[in-house]
Length: 363
Image (cartoon, rainbow, N blue to C red; front, side, top):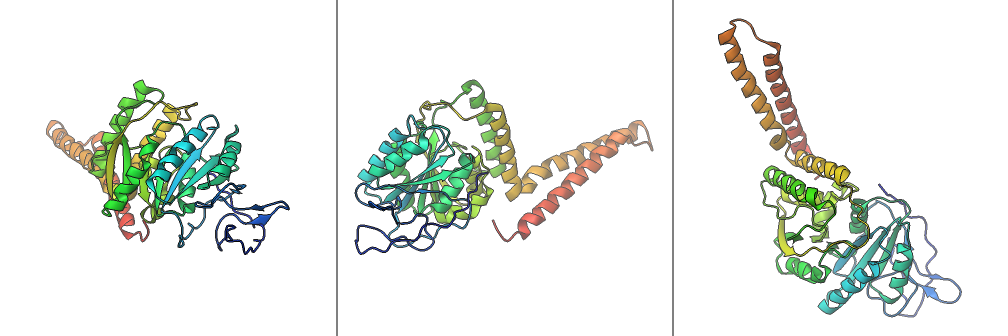
C-alpha cells in the first residue's frame, strides 16, 4: 500500500494580486516564488495558464471542505496511461465544463514507469481544474481511490478509469442523480457488456461471484465491480479504511454501502475495450475478488456466512448418529462425532463474531 507522508512545504508568499491564491492552512500545495514567476497549486477555478504543483501525500486525515471548494471531484488513477490519459482529461473536462458544475480533476500518478506524470503536468498548464497527486511507490487502484477520496475537496466524488473504457461523458448525469435525489448515496454505471481480457473466463466467474454477493447481501446488484460511480464523500469517508489496495476496492465500497442501508442507484452504461495494456491478472485478482466479497459480508454479517454450514454439519451429524445407533447400538463412529463437534465449533465462532460486530463502535 502506498503511503507517502507530506513533508514540510515552502513558505507561502503573500500577495496582493487577487489572481494569485494564497494557500489555506492544512491544504496541499503552496505558492512559491521561483524567481521569474509565481507557481500556484493546481486548484479548480484558477484562470489561465500556470505551472502546476505536483503534490505528494499519503494516508492521513481527510481534508476539510471550505467555502468556495468545488462541488465535484473526479478521482482519476493513472498507471502507465501516457498514451491516452490526455484524451480522458479532454473528455472529462469538456462535459463537466458544459454541465456548469464546479469541479476539480484529481489525477493520481501511481508511480508510473512511463511518461504519465509528465503528460499530467503538461495538461495541468492548460486545464485549471487539474490537481496532481504523485505516488513514489505503486499502491494499486484501491490505494489511489482511497487517498484521492480523502484529499478530494468536492462533496460528490466520482471514481473512473483513465483507460477509455467507461462512458465518462455521463459523469454529469451520475452527479445530477445525487443532486436531485438525496435518498441515494451512490450512483453506479452498470455495464451492459464485458470487454475485458480473458472474457471467456471473466463473464461466468463474475456472474457467480455477483450472485454470491447478492445472496449474502440480500440485494440485487446489476454490476458489482464497475469502476464508474459517483459517491457522497461524507458518507464514504468512514468506509475508506476497508478498501483493499487492488481492483476489488469498488466491490468493497458497494458492499459496505449495501450492508449499511445506504441506497445505490444503477444507471446502465456501455463499456469499451480498454486502451493500452490491462493490469488485471485473472487468477490472482479473481481470487482476491472472491475473498473480498466474503470478507466484507463477514465484517458486517458473519452469521450469514458461518451459521448455515454450522447448522448443516450439526443436522447431518445428528441424522448420521441416528443411523449409526440403529445399525450399531451403543457405537458412535469418530466421523459422526467430528461432524457434530465441527458444527458446534463453527456455530460458536459465528455467534462470537456476531457479538464483536454488534459491539463495534466504528463502521
